[in-house]
Length: 151
Image (cartoon, rainbow, N blue to C red):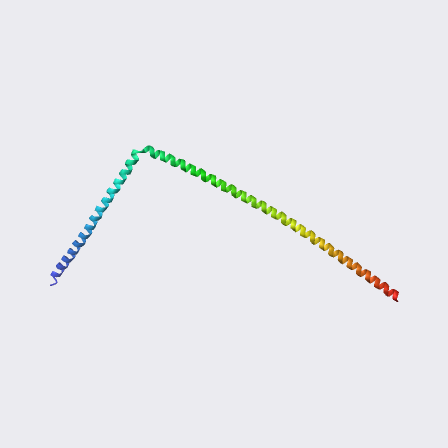
């Protein structure tokens, strides 16, 4: 009984291998057919494009020259725009600096004014204190004289 088992098992394995091989082989053939069709289509398109390029070489040169001219104009316009923006930025910075200087001058003038007013107030306070002191002295003298005369 054990004699026939390897023969049957090997027959089963062989049939499985043949089945899988044919399945994969068919898929490979189908893929190859699709790839060759795609290659033919790509070759057709490429040959058409090449034919157009060969037929009109002057147009492509003219188009290339026009494209270069447009690119040059666009580059010049971009440079001009950048220059314009830079000038505007400089003008804004200058205006801001001028405004800042004016504000500083105004602040200095205001500080001077306040300082002068404060000094005047201090002088007035000193004068009042001096006057009050003199008045107090005069009153004290008068009181002292009144006491002397009263004695």
